[in-house]
Image (cartoon, rainbow over the protein chains, first blue to last red):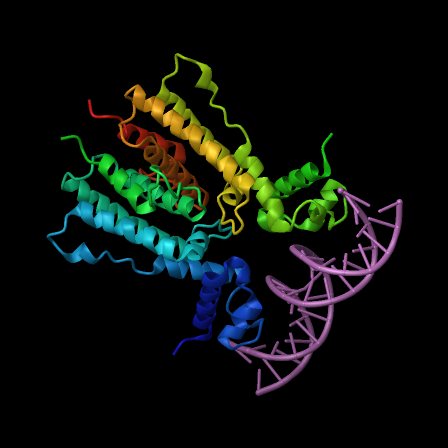
Length: 188
Length: 188
DNA sequence: ACCTGAACACCGTTCAAGT
DNA sequence: ACCTGAACACCGTTCAAGT
């Protein structure tokens, strides 16, 4: 049984996917959830608070790399799968991606917590890949930030059409992530 | 003598800087430019077209690395200065940065041209740095895309607070750019 | 060619009132 | 505690009209 609050978040997410942030009107959110156009104010402070809940739910969504439990898969491969999953999610749901990494005037705790645990999982994967000498040394948090920045930037440039779509410079975001991981291999 | 069109763009840029995209209302733009609230429609198709003009002017703004004309400065240093200038611009004008790389439903030619020449300058710098063996080989357009993606992503994560602000993982976007350039150095 | 004032539809938000 | 309907202020856009 979905609570009204959940239905409001689902409706907002659907409108966001279909028409971007501008299409998320409280009137339409209410209509999709089967309530009046200002019932949302009983569950969220305002529209921004509703969108923050949508973003938090996206960040908290478990992104489990399929190979994580398989001991025959190397740390670097798990790291690579994590970043490819991140890229695939962003390309598949560009509006959610833009929303999640938009500017939040009031940083909700829910959102900060979700972001923190996602970052911790990435740092752990980097540490594993360094332990098996597949990724060069250095502060794992710093290396994780570099990898995340590259994946994030590649997706954002691709979504806004600032990555060359054709010619020999053509590269998908996944390709750029792989390029970086190659350059991160330690010197033999 | 500034034309009305220029004054409208300037007013929109100022409002964008002060209060984000939501603060750019055609009524306030007109008031700042000294015209009525719908005079902009004689110069731009609609609000999105006005914002596209703002974005195009930002992209076309010359970003001249100070050292570009100095023959004693290496190609890699020019490349590094270009990316640091990009990061500094984005941090200084976050709203313009977000707007410029937002989703453009109708890709204006003006915007596409400006983006193209900016990319060409970056590729040329990469080529120079490769020629002096300061950056590893490979398709220069692809390497340029990797560098741009990292700088762009680092800035976007920093602006949205998704880069750890404290602790040993702390890194400014400029630091991540430098980290990448270090990893890009060719094996001796 | 460029601009103005009135008007329309739409949206976020508030408020008084209902169960 | 949760919801509704009316109302308000604001905004993008259009239109008829002015110079």
